[in-house]
Image 1 (cartoon, rainbow, N blue to C red):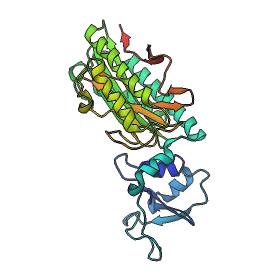
Image 2: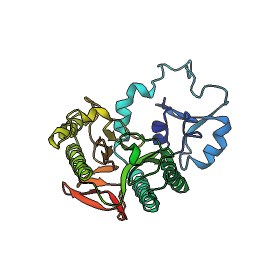
Image 3: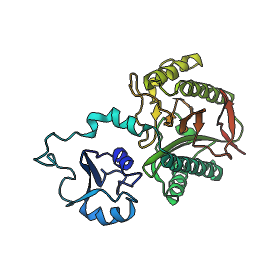
Image 4: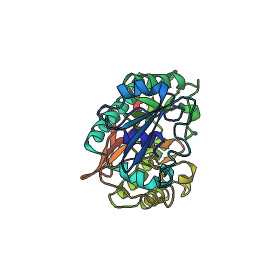
Length: 330
């Protein structure tokens, strides 16, 4: 029984599974050895079948009244085995969807490029007097105009840079700001963080930015096919002390992980058993106070490929890769 947004969107080839971004999916999928059953709330079924399924016409469709459970506790009394919920095989399902197929990757590349472009547009249009909310509105509106769900839109101006997850407020940007976006389209989610500065730089902040990029380089160097996510996590978190940060800095914010059909699929913690696969996307996000880097990347045959790339954004070379620098305005 597949009932999460990540699993249902994946098995239905990128279908939109929501009405409310805060709500449960309006569809569930029951996979049997004898065939696949799509369960839809009846009030959503006509639209869903006409607009979301594409070529997936061989599914058995069950329309469920809106006031009944989408998936009942007992599917069929004649089933020989109890239904297996996706939560019981979470690691196996993540492995099944980890390596993107060519059509998925084409969609993902386009999504990541557009998310990066939206962030560049917002940063270039911003001014120090703009409120965080105004910048967030620009980001969310531009994403929505491209058919991208703005799942996360964070903005921190100078007065709020200490917060790792800065929900936007009416505070002005001031001389420095951080923009964070997680955008979803076709079930896939792109993640990125950008920094913009108005006026002259600050040597201490520039130094911290350079050092956090070195920490990210350690995460990326360890993210190779066949490696465990636990080992990649250990390599990245060990780099904090090596580059002048508190060795426990990683405990103050999550460090990211695999990406794709979830913002983090999974969010890596010490001991996560999943294995890195060729063709799998990642979004590590090492961070310290006033310093953070985050891009969606792909583990490719030739190494790490940055997907959330916009050639208009300034870059600095770190470990042989172009990484986002601070955008200087004025």
